[in-house]
Picture 1 (cartoon, rainbow, N blue to C red):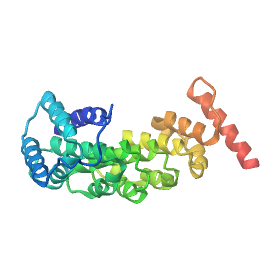
Picture 2 (picture 1 turned 180 degrees about the horizontal axis):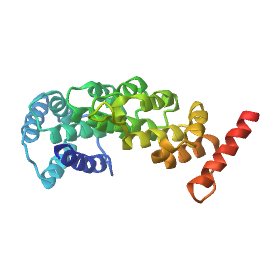
Picture 3 (picture 1 turned 60 degrees about the vertical axis):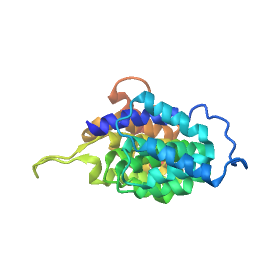
Length: 266
C-alpha cells in the first residue's frame, strides 16, 4: 500500500514538475551574495525536512523552490544525497533539479539509478525520461534488472519513449528473467507472466526489433502464450508493417501463419 500511495503522489509530481516551466535566469545576478545562497539553502533544507506534507504544501514548496531558480540547486542536491529526508520530498527535489538545470543535470541525476532506495531510483529514471536523456543506455540496461519491478517497468518506459532501438536486445532478454514472473510457491507449479511481460512484448514491437519477428511468429500460434496474444499481434504489426485482419483470434493466427510460410519460402 505504501508503494501505491507513493506512486500516486509521484505521478502528480511528474506532471506538475515539468509542465509550464517558468522563465528562469540560469545565472545568478550579482545581488546574490554567498550569504544569500547559504540563506536559501538553509531555508529550503528546513522545508524539505518536514514529513507528511499535504498536496497543497507540496505544491507550495515546489513553487517556492522554483522562485529561487538556480540558487535552490545546492539545497536540492543536499536533499537528494542525504538520508534523513522524506521520500516524497527527495522525489520532488530530484524533479525540480531537472527542471531548473535541464539536461545539464542528467549526469548527476543518473547516478541515482544505482541508489539503495527504490524511490530515488524511480525519481532518477522518471526525471531522465522527462529530460529525454538518451545517452545512458548502460544505466537503463542495469535498471532493467533492478530488484524492484516498478523500477524495471520505468526503465522499460524510458527505453520505449525515447525509442532507444539499440536497447532492444536487452528488452527482449527480460522475457528470460525470472524476476518478471510470478513464481509458484510449490516447485510443481508454473510461473505466471506479469503485466510487465506484456509491456516488454509491446516495447519490442515499438523498437522494431527484427530479430524477435520469427520467435513471435512461432509463439503466437501456441496456446500457452494466449495470455499475451494481443501484445504479440501488436508487436508483429510494428515489426513487419503488416496488420492482421480484424476478427477473432483464429483469423489473426491464420494471417500470421501464412506470413511465416511466405517468409520461410523466401
